[in-house]
Every structure is written in C-alpha cells, then in structure tokens.
Length: 170
Image (cartoon, rainbow, N blue to C red; front, side, top):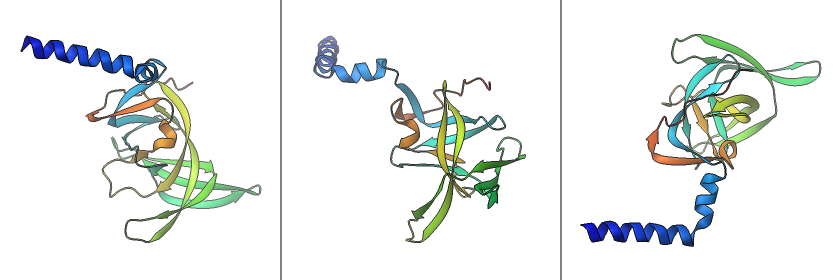
C-alpha cells in the first residue's frame, strides 16, 4: 500500500514536470467552477442557477414576453425574467445586439434575439452576450457557453456550486 502511494506521488510529479502549462493556467487566473453554479444578473440583483456548458458556444437566458421594438431608430428588446426564488417578474429592456438562428434538435429553426447582460460568476463581473428564449422546460434558467467562460473558467464536471457570486453591485 505504501509503495502504491509513493508511485502515485512520483507519477504526479512527473506529470507536473511534463505539463507545466497545466499548473500555470490554473495559477494564471483560472478558476474552477462546478457544472452548475449560481450567477447574479447585475440588473435587478437576481440570482439564478446556471448550467456551465463547454459544449455550447453561446449562452441563453430564460425570458418570456419577448418583444422587439424601436426607440429613436435603435433596435431594442423588452423581456421578462422571473426570479425562481420568489416568483417575482423583472421587466428589462436592452439594446438588440443581433438575431441568431438556432437549429433545434428536432431540425426546426428558431430566431432568437441576442442582448448583452451584465452578470457575476464567482468573483468575475462581465458582460455576456445571451440569446433570449423560454427555458421553462429546462431545469436551469441560464446556460453559460464557452464564449462567456473563455480564458478564466475550468469546469469540474463532478461538482456543483463551488463559487457563489461575489461581485459588488457598484
């Protein structure tokens, strides 16, 4: 048993020497998150559960009553986000960044508005492009894709809720 322990230590040391970039990337500002984390929408200080999905390129937010409109010649989107903790609705308006065409698993195409949403993940405050869609049939109201986590997040697929949102609202 003691020999197996020593072999494990030696093997880990050799791996670290062979792959110094792995340690550097973690020490270089990378944070480890579970595959599900709480994120805070900085608009309205709303806390939501989000699935961190490295298989998805983009992010999605559960929204209802999605309405595109124009104000002073600019394109906007008005939508409702529901607080899952108390059921209260938060009405938001954001400039429309673009529309995306999503191909669903069934083969159907869907046109979704994309907006920029300020969020907090762990101690990182950032503005993320999210497409708006009714996700009420999904367990998690938000999906964070690769583009939102690029350069700072590693996902531990066996863990959840490792880094609660710790950003100030200022």
